[in-house]
Image (cartoon, rainbow, N blue to C red; front, side):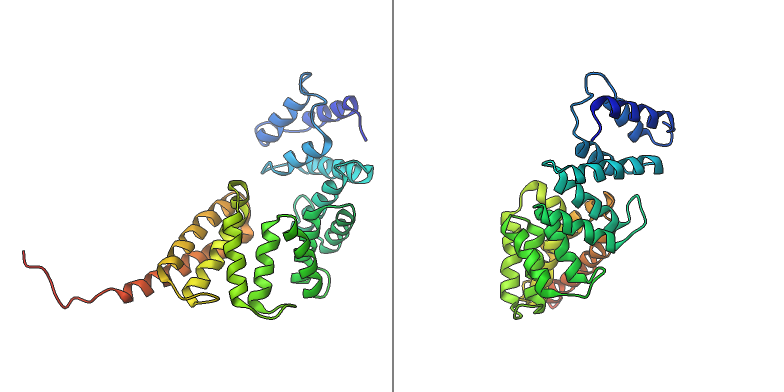
Length: 273
């Protein structure tokens, strides 16, 4: 692992290779890192993760991020499991690299073995959707259960999906509905940024079609509207994979409005003015 002086030299070298006009956010962050007062106050994992969330990075800086994560993952430190999970996530999405589910699964497995609950949840996704492996709902349920027991609401609502569809567990729409409601009830403001949109979308469908509960078109409309708002923020923030979900929320809201409109009284009477 680099000491803070080696890291400082590398950061200065990276800065000399970057155009501040083209990469203003990245340059600003690196300049703050090399400041004498800040140097050494950032762990390698924190540097890598901060850079990962800057929208635009040059290839040389992505190489730096991967190098930091690789070395931290091999270090055996308290951050090594999270570093390995981050590498898996980058390969899963093809961010800063060529997408490779094979490499992603390898890093997730290493991170999970090192104790990362997030990596276990991510493995659940890999088995659920068959990422570089056959679909295996039993293993997906196993990994999602580990995450759910540790408070991961994404794992919890995916278990709800498995009950809704009868994947590995017997189909039980009522159980799925109760799980989705539990996600909302247990959600913190921070978790809502990532979980509320997908969960409200599912609840909207439940209320619209009577899945696991009685149809309630007003509740369906409210859920779809909340889903659209949260999903819009996710897509705007860079999670473009949720664009179809956002569109589904808009369509669901329109269907709920149509159902509500059909329940309104007709024009058999009017007020006299």
